[in-house]
Amino acid sequence: MSSKKRNIYIYLGKVILITLLIVLFIRGFIISSFSVSSSQMETTLHNGDKILINKTAYGIRLPITPLSVPFTFDNFWGLPSYSSVIQIPYYRLFENNVEQNDIVLFNTPWETEKPLDKRSLLLSRCVALPGDTIEVRNDTFLINGNVYEATPNRIQEYWIKNGDKAEVESVSNEQNIPIYNLVKRGDTLFTQLSRYDAFILSENLQDTLRPLFHFTDTIKSYKITLPTKGQSINTDENNLVIYRQIILQEQQGENVKIENNKLLINNIEQNKYTFKDSYYWMLSDNTANSIDSRTLGFIPFQNIIGKASYIWYSPAADRTHTDFCLIPIK
Image 1: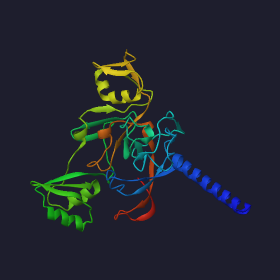
Image 2: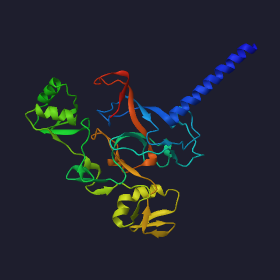
Image 3: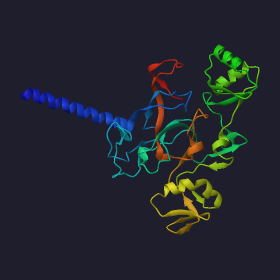
Image 4: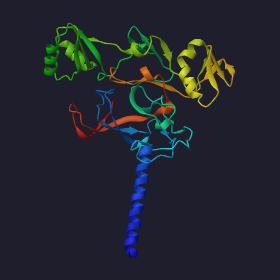
């Protein structure tokens, strides 16, 4: 091989290597693509949408598991694509606050046997911030004493007593209203609609359309306050019931246990506990089919990866623009 050809190959190799490093840097620290694989954020986001996650929105979370195969998440051809032999402690650069109503990508607080950055990814809307008080009262969801006004696109279940299925289908077609899972059980119709579409449909139906609440299916009716990093609480029976899981997760690897309504760390009873992280409450737009804080509980700030900013590809038929596009996410 001539020296000229060898120099060309060396040059091309350097270009490819530098390009890969730049892509890895951008994907790891600045912005990355995420595929929506469920209906829990409909109608804001649809199953199959490709979205851009801004990883700088809340500060850059540094990698925790450096020994990973590039361009994979947690597996490659069914095999683990990372080694947990080396794990770097959690750290975030240029930390910023999450804002209410942001749609956030985060790692589940479950799967604690995995490294933090290799736990399953979830997408949901942040509805309450550290220090906020959330309450479920008489099938009503309140934040700081105010009824939570969800986005008009939020999907939930509705029911119509003695409803006429043919009439509902006819009106929905006339008004161009997408209806999900319209079924009849006994003399009652059940369906899933956005708040806006439910309003339009109810204005054109003879029978009354009523929301079917799910808050009490997963959360008992009580009031809780989201912890803030550095906040201290008394370790009384009530607080240990509410914050038990948080305390045990924060103290992983340490000798901690809760027995007889007492918190013991290194076998010493603790009268107070200071939180190591701030916590958020996530609620998906499609409350009928979702995994969010109603089942997961408090979401630690360290689990948050970034903000869902743009849809860059969508196969959904009801989009104003389909296929390749840049639609801001609200």
